[in-house]
Amino acid sequence: MGTALVTGVSRRASIGTAVARRLLDRGDRVVVQSWAPHDAEQPWGADDLPAVLAELGDPPHLSVDLADPAAPAALVAAARDAVGPLTTLVAAHARSAQGRLADVTAAEVDLCFAVNARGSLLLTQSFAAQHEVSAGPGSVVLFTSGQHLGPMPDELPYAISKGAVQQMTLSLADALIGADITVNCLNPGPTDTGWASAATQDVVARAMPRGRWNTPAEAAAVVAWLTGPDARSVTGRTIDAEGGFRRGA
Image (cartoon, rainbow, N blue to C red; front, side, top):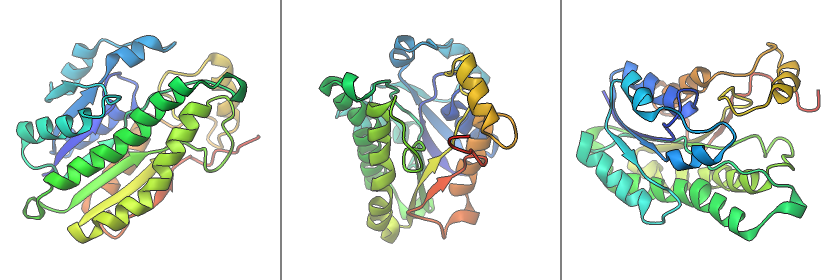
């Protein structure tokens, strides 16, 4: 049984919620993080967070804005206080942002980098600092998008910051393998988390060999493998679990 911190657990349809559920079901003690104000700003809106947490069995929950540079360390410390030394970190949070090149603003780029890239880096730093080998091997799973496989010109602030997450993975893995901590990055491909319009849903579904989007539960299954005993030899990798997504189809 492990101890885990999972970020990005604020909506029923989110990958973070699916990951938390999967880890809880296998017997891990899990602390979850959310930042509902971000969801409230987006077209999909915020969910009923108390109900989401209740469906997970009311695990320890922290509402933390990862745009704050001090937040990652405080979050990891609070999670450790709640369940003991952490053996797993899953950074499934994300700040979403639209914007083509002509529309990009420095403020939005900085915010996406702060939440997505810097937040993931500092969470990993704090996780590693508190890790105790006696508690068991450690696992970190970061999240990227598909920007390393194809262009995302309509979401530049988001895509660029997620690209930084993908690029940092190998270096973080090298830094931490000596401490028996694996670090991997998951690209879950087009995943139905309720953000897409009906038109986008249709276009993407036709580009998927299975005729449907990937599900949050499928992403969570990959996370469960990466943080379980069968994947201890896998580190520094970006796992493209896209379900055969055919770009340009």
